[in-house]
Length: 567
Image (tube, rainbow, N blue to C red; front, top):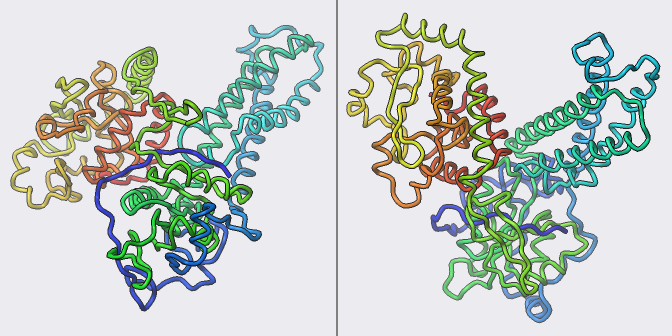
């Protein structure tokens, strides 16, 4: 059993308790899956969590005979021989180990070929190796994968709770690699091992890059399977109606998080006048069955075959402690939601005070040395990108000029950091009278909130459709990154008329430089609702770090290739 504390509240919409259809036991009237399919215990099977479809529900017992004992001594343990088990987690860890082993073998072999295979440009980094036997390097090819995997395991880089999301997995991989490098350097110095310095300078950085690439590839495969309803955690949500609905929404909003909510457990007995009274049969919460109360949690866990229990922040400490005690030995993960929204990563730490674990929340890192490092990385990468892509720039500019009247570069006023306006550059993808035609097309607007979007916009030129399809119209923004008005990663650069209509917390988007890409780019782009776009931008502002930037840049390449929301 592990207990962690992720972020909690989501949108403020009220949950709905819809009575189930008496024909099939579902709120939406769709036919239920047969019992055999719904009872598959492994999240890797298609029936284990296909898109959050409810699993077998236990009878809603309300104040059953066990409730009195539960009130006296806490919730009863799941009992019997029940243990949470996810075979796909073990298989996924084995795949990651195989990736790490392959990375080390390739790195060792590649370093040997580069250093001793006729590539003489690194000779100045080494000593005379004419008398050194190649068996040292053959031995490293065998020993390095073993040492590497052991170091990753000791640094908990294979623990399931760190896999599949966030940057913690990559941080642990890099930390483990640094420790291996330090250990090997110390041992080789103490034993005076005759190993070429150039070989060492190649093999470890290459192994790190390949290991991280393998993790990214494995995560991509895992996310694709989760979108198909496979490799999911079977989650039982515990809480009051509003807080439970928030957790359910979070799980349903992002299938790549791996949460298949199989049931909801209320934190209280049904009220006399509530719609979830037992004599009125069961009810669904946002399509997820209500399977009991916190006093019958043990019954609900066994009935739903849950592997994770997600608890809302309203549960009191004494009840929560009893839940943790009673789940010991079941391998059921316990996640306790905080009342924070989209505050994750390094900003959160646990600080014990008088025996009470408290969340310590650091301020967002909006200034300082890391921001300077981000600026240096942005401008260096933008300069290299402009130099390498200059032939493409010229070709696209000629195509735009030959297919429609007007300049190739479109200049538009946008609002940047601190509310300062700047001129943003893009390849022109619309006709010159595009702005004048907005009022005529307002009735056909498919965007939400302050955004104007149309899938088949008649203002887009023939060349513009191609540019937008592959996001090539954004490339001139590299010049904005060079002049310091934009960043490679950040919130979407808004128009002045949009900023004029900002209300409340939305202004926090302007606390950092807007970006050429961002969380909005890799999460659907034009397909996003306005509120979701704002939430993603604020999440970036609150939790920015360099590791997040690298992940977003990597995922942007795949988002462009998938062409999701590109119109």
